[in-house]
Length: 354
Image 1 (spheres, rainbow, N blue to C red):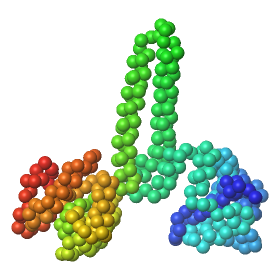
Image 2: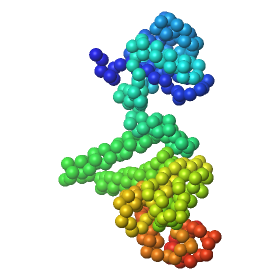
Image 3: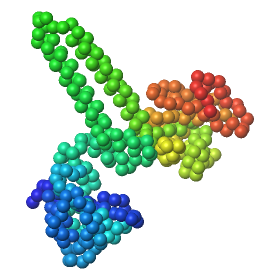
Image 4: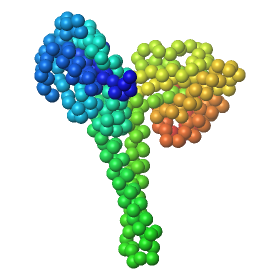
C-alpha cells in the first residue's frame, strides 16, 4: 500500500453552491492517467486549455469541460496536476470528482494541496499560512497583506535577517580567533551597527504584526462596566439589531457575547461582557473572569459608566482595571446622558470621555 503522501488526490476547488464555473483538481502521479480515462483523449499537451467531453467510468457523458494539464514539477503542488473546469453547480462537479475517485484517486484532506506544495518545496510555511488565511479574508486590506506574504515578503525578510546574523557571527568569530592579530578597528563597530539595525527592524515587524492581526482577524473591542450600566444596549446599537438581552435586572449578561460588524473597510469584533462586581454567585464569578480575559485579549477597551448613578466602588474598580492596562487603546464612555447627571465625570479627567 502506498503512503498517504504518494496517493493521487482529488477535490472540488471551488465553493459549494450555484455558479457559472466549478473546478475539480487532481494531483499526483496518476493525474494524467485519470485525465486520459475521463476525457478519452490520448495526446494531452501540458498547459493547453482543451475543451473536451468528460465521461464516467461506465462511459456515460458527464459534461463538456475545459481540461488543463500541469506537468511536474511546474505546478502548484510540484506534482502532476489536472484541472477540470466544468459548468457550475454541485451536481456536475460532484460527478466528475466521483469519477476521478473511481479511477484511483482518493479524496483530498482539507489543505492537502497546500501541504504537498510545502513538502515539495514550492512554498514555505509563511506562504502556506497566507494561502489559508487569504481564502478566509474578510476585508480588502487583509487580502492585500496576505497576498504580499504569499508572494514571499515575510520569507524574504527572514532570509535577509538570517544572512545578516551569520555575517555578524562570522565577524565575531574572526575577532575571537585572531584577537592578537592586527584587525581593523571598525569591525566591532560594524557588528554593532548591523545588530542595531536588525533589532530595529525586528521591533517594527513585531509592532506591525499586531496591526496585521487586527486587519486579518478583526480588531477586538471589549465593552466593560459594572452591572446594568448599558453594555448590552451599546452592543445592540452598534450592531443595529438586538443581539444581547437587555433588562433592568443587574447581572443579566453572565458570559461574553462576541459579534462582528464591518465599519468602513475594517472588521470589528464587539464583545459584550459580564458586569464586574463583587458576587457570591459561582456562575457570575466565572463570567467576570471571562470578562477580564476578554479585556486582556482586546485591541480596544470601552469603559462604560452610568451618568445617572453616583460614582461608587464598582466604578472605581472598573477605572483601576482600565488604568492598569498596557498597550491598549482605552475609550471612556458615559452613558444615559438624557437622565439627570449625578456621576462625577471629573474622576475620568485623565482620559478622553465620550
